[in-house]
Structure formats: structure tokens, C-alpha cells
Image (cartoon, rainbow, N blue to C red; front, side):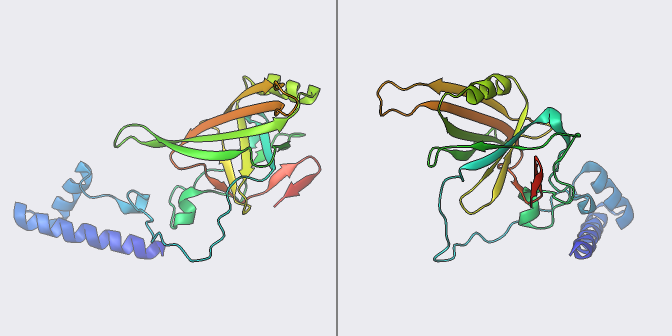
Length: 231
């Protein structure tokens, strides 16, 4: 597939260069060099403008349950030794939005991801578009609710309040979505309520956000925990 893209890129470049050569009355090599220098012809070998558009169809009967699973994962950025990145030269739609997982997230000695619980049907991941035309990107957001006002929850809120973080949340179907990166760490705003009535919800709401060129990317690599690793 990659060799085919390289071949078609050179063929396109040569054809355009020949066309302009006939108009400018110069050699095709000279015309092509000028056009490349001016950026009129994308140099595809470097991955520029190699879009991976695909049909957006819907298969009848596809499972599409909303919400996120009750267990997610988090880590301070300071504990992470290596951050997986999006491929520099994606060849498929999957590559466009999936972090490289060969190495995945690795940690400094003695560090790992922690689990975080959220009450069922209180949590979500949202990707919002931001920016002006020709300069658009995405805001990655998550809102989760942790029940209660335990000492551990209060201490978590203190620690996360001004820390750079990475969160991984699982969609209902198991797809892992990452919020936070080395370039744009996730920030978390925790807020507590005791509720007013005895039937009110009591606990901590967390508003989490980060930024990226894609919606919150997918991750298929290992999630390293204390004493175990989830593949």
C-alpha cells in the first residue's frame, strides 16, 4: 500500500510538471522543482495530504450503547516515562485516531496507572470542535461522578487540583479513549456536594479536559497497574 502511494505520488508530480513545462516552455524537471518549492505539489512521501477518507455507512443492527464503563484509569503525567503518539504517516482511518501501542504508556520505576470508579450513568466523554476555519481542533472532555466524601476522595481532589494528568475511559463496547498527553496534559476540576435532601446524590463531580488534533484518541496497548497489566 505504501509503495503504491509513493508510485502514484511520483506519477502525479511528473504529469503536473510536464503540463506546466509545456506552458512555461521549460524542462519538466525544472517546472516540477519550481512547483515543489512553491508548495503547489504536495510531496506525498512525507505524508502530507495523504487523507484516509472512507465510506461512513451504518450496518443495520450494530450495537451502539452509550455511556462509559464504571472503571477508568488515571496517572499523573510526572509518573509517565513514555507517551504513545499518533502515527506520523497513517495509512488507514484506524491509524488516524489510534495511539501507537507497540511500546504504549511506560512508567518510571514504581509508578503505574490507578483505577478510578464512577457511578453508573453519570459519566461521559465528549469531543467538541474549537477554533476558526482552517485552524480547527478538538477539546477532549470527560465528566465523571465519584460517590461519597471519603478521606481518599477529598485527598484525591487536593492532589489532582493543580496536577497534569492522563485519563483513560472505556466506552460501553470496551473502546479505550485517552484524555491528556505530554503536549496537552489533562486538567481536572473536582467539586463536592453533600446534597440537601437525604435522597440527593452526595459525592465528587470531576470535569476533565485536554486538547488535540483528533477526537480523544483510542488506545489498544497495555494499561500497567500495581502488580498487573491489562492488555
